[in-house]
Image (cartoon, rainbow, N blue to C red; front, side):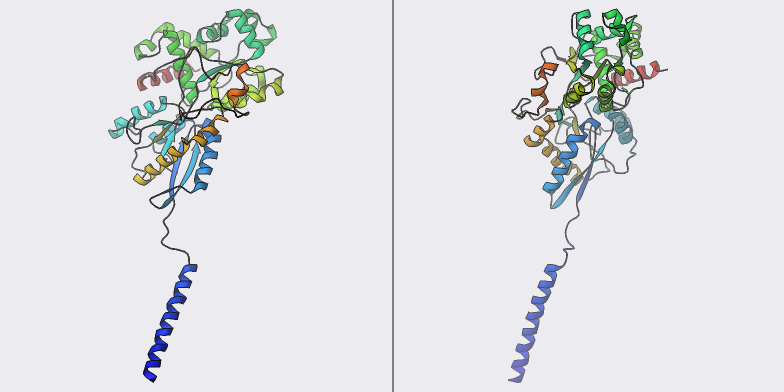
Length: 393
């Protein structure tokens, strides 16, 4: 009897101990939880506001891959600087993906990467192909009073040929019928070696000079008349070259016509900042679209480098998919971008949509005279950059 009671007592103790251990384990942290799957995305500076808000939301939503929570880190960088750092592998946190401003930089990076590694770093087809996130064309931006004089003198909207003639006018604005105290016509663009908008600007200027939309060659760029024409444009650029397009747009509004009369910049930047001009200078900005243009399509490029794992590359695709989601694409409209997702219209009932607000100042949903040019070869792009370097004092 005593033996039976002892056995029952031992069983009871074991059961109680098991329950106690189970309860205790429930309160202890789970040491088997998988670590976060972290990725780093380097992106063009003009994407900063939109991408920062999107990445914060993505991280808050707790997206997972294979049981791991994906965490996105961002780093804003001019496209030229980013290309150099990726090419030379000079990053504290090697990027899993890169979103430059346009496909021009994809061509350049692949052209510099391939001879060293025997393969492209960015794919043009397949699962990991470079995929547009948002779109924005290039535009001329001019102060309203200057635009009226310009249109009256030339009888047409500004473009490369008329801008070049305006820059070469012997008495500046006075020669065009404007006020003498306006001085010479002051033109601004960014550095084409480091900034995408500057590189696109000189690419469009070259296409316009040769009156074509594709097939630009290095041999054509060697033409003496073309080089003299380009240098006359560059001589008309005032001050130093901004590295960032946002700074160019900011300075035009901040300093008014004392700094710039006309600039070439992204449509999204003027669309998002148009509201700031009248309150500072009592006049508005006018937007004009060049005859030849190129979509800055902000491709999302998963880098096929061995510094990131297969899981990190797939996590980057998850973030790309999120950025193309309709609600996230609609948010891009607030920053003046055109959605890359064709299911998201540019015009909607949002009162803050700049494409609803600023049509009278020239912002256009449908651009009637636009002809899209072909992204030139890496050799042509590099030669244009070399021309620019040689022309600098």
